[in-house]
Length: 268
Length: 283
Image (cartoon, chains in turn brown, cyan):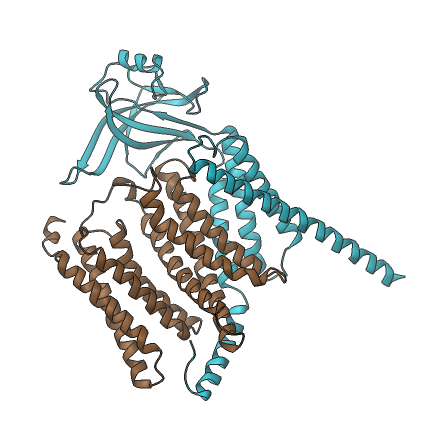
């Protein structure tokens, strides 16, 4: 690991790469709205470029640490940027979700801007014994997939509220449903893998830790969305639970770690 | 006559359905309110919120609500319904496993000291002083009985003898822990011994017990390094694990294997075509 650390990019260079990736993503986002085919192609090129730069940062984090970079918030957010790209490709080709690309790109731009501001954070991070488990990668990656899908679904929900009744709105609502249907199982998987891991590490499936409770609340909000959507009179309220789920997701991801006090999920 | 009988039966069925739905919604609403209240109380620093009768009642209500949902709202028989049953029965199984564990499981935290740094006399004092240690040493340095972590004075026989014979810590350059490993020695009934490595995330299974390596640190009261272990006996663990696997499988089946995928994709393609004909793409 020490030898590999000598290849680590400097903090300034990493921050520069993050900013460059953010600009590429935002550029791709802006080009989405053009009706000209050439500019639409440019959008795709910028998005691919942004993903490649983002992946270089992930690769650097991986190389210098010697483990999948999921430990610190900086590492997680950098990887999350690439996850959005993977998830978009899935939605594009499996669920014909090309119309969602602008939302994905917008999110990626915001995330990489955050990574830019965290650019001074050390790239290397210790890997505590509790995290050295076979559950670690699937647990975190499942959450990343679901968080990216729910994030985009929430953004689309917010916009659909202001959208006039019509074909576009119906398509957005169907897209939101597809996103939640794809993201929900991964969120459940992430949570229950966490429970199995906790049983192997701490001897308890569930400890009612702050992070656990908030992640359960997020899952429940999405479950309410899926249940309400099937109910004739409650269906119109369902979409608000996607927005709520996203708010809970943000609380789980950022605020519990910052203000949650003593948590089993704090390792350093 | 037949029509009248069928109408009455349908009416009765609808009434039962409505009644069950009402009970289901009431249970879920009460559960949600109780969980919200408990979260607020726990956030305000009230202790013991997630333990004992209140949480057992909330989980029992959830189990009953799910059972009603499975009976009253089961979908038509297709792949989707397999997912539906797997998901809901999975949660019920997990709750049942947790309930059985709460009734018959045993958990104990122990700090058997590294035998090189402590004498059996000190171990005895630790127990007498009511320190956090819950293990009782019987043979020279070996443990074979434990007290529950819930504060009760019940002593449980492990059915085997064990002790820590060595402990190694690997650190990063900044002093953060990189790897812990304890060597546990078991004393068999025929007097022979066998040794096993114990690391974080990899508990040792023995006679229905799991031995966990939790932590290592200095005991401020007695001034020596101690290895913190946890012993747990959960007879319902296979049930809980089965519940988790069923829940995950059911969720994936419900969300991925269902007719909507094809119809939605077709609808999207139609929209895309009509949008392309009109020129421009709406976001």
